[in-house]
Image (cartoon, rainbow, N blue to C red; front, side, top):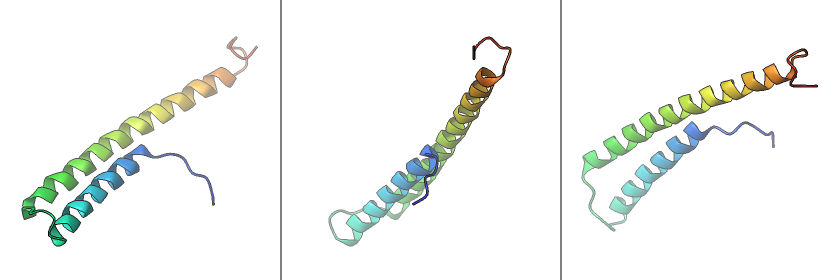
Length: 80
């Protein structure tokens, strides 16, 4: 299996969509009563939070990459 970079935004989206699935499964199984409109804020809030986490993670990843590139440049005094 190929390795890939960790994407926390997709993790957050997956967790919220899984939670929405659990809510509907509990409703279908008769474990609890859930109004139809409960899942809309759950999914939309999860997608919004996933987007925010993705933006923060991408900006942190880009900033970390820029710092590493600066350290590798000769003449900066950081690499020896």
